[in-house]
Each structure stands twice: as structure tokens, then as C-alpha cells.
Length: 203
Image (tube, rainbow, N blue to C red):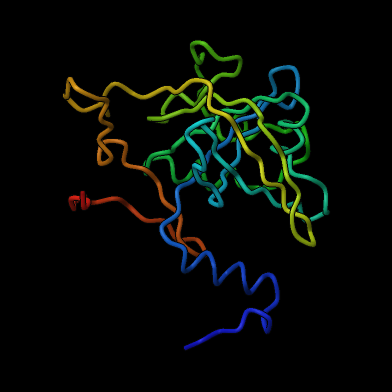
């Protein structure tokens, strides 16, 4: 079956892409709406894009009203964000934090999510996330007819739960099965990482 994208509406293309580019990691992004009023939202159009400088990219759409989402607004105003890797046990909280709220309404408060101090960074982090990246805004690019905001975030510091770090002295090893990351599929579906395997790269 071949599908010509020129025959599809943007919403149809979205559903096609989210059901075929799978699984996708989820960036659970915390920003400050002002006066320690924290916004928390998930994005699965998300990827690492560079290691020098260390950059990650999040693609953020608009609210149904056409306004920019709070994540974009807050990042442009403060220049700071924390990108979390949520685990499977947080699927319900991650899903609930995708709801569209008025600016200033906190998903952290609405879902009773516990935050803790992020050592060496201005913003807090979600306590139960095994990985958190303290980031500074690098650049925002607007693309497309809507348009979509591409947020490039430079990583300043990383928190990793000691429980997910492997026992190896020569380099840092993060044990993916212990991270137990929540991964996005199409529609309302998520996936679970149940096993890993290795294939040696050619020299």
C-alpha cells in the first residue's frame, strides 16, 4: 500500500506518522509560568540532535485556540526547562498532563505530582522520574503553516537515579530496563520496554 501525502489532510498525516514512527520517547517538560507556578506537559515529537553542543529538540504545536502552548511561552520568557524521561508507572500522570489548561494553571498541582530540588539547576524536577535534563533555551524555530515551534534545548546538567546506573567502572552505563521508559505509539497507546539485545557494529 502506497499513500500519497498530498491527498491527506494534516490531521490524517499526523495520525499516520504517529502510528508508524514507533515507539517514540516522551519528553515530559517542566517550565515555570511565573512565581514558581510550574507547567508540566508531554511531547513525543522529541529527539536528541547534537552532542557538541548537547542539544535536544521538542516540537510543540498550538492550543486549540491557536495560541502558543504554555511550554513554548514559558521557555521564551524564562529560557529554562527540565526535560524528564518518565517511567511506565507514570503513564496516567503523563497522560493527564496533556490536558489543555489556561495559562497559569499547573498540571503539577492538578495531578498532585511531587517535585524536588534539582541540584545545580534553577528549576525543580519531578521526584519519581529516573532521568531529568536541566536545560537552557538554545533556539526556537517556527515551521509549517500552523506554525509548529521547534524548541532546541541545551543540556546543562543531568540527574540519573542511582538505581538505574549499572555496575561498571570504565564508563557510565544506564540500564534501560531499570529506567523502564514510557514510550509513545499512535492514538492512546503506549509501549513497554521488555527486553534488550546487542549487535556488534562493524569496525
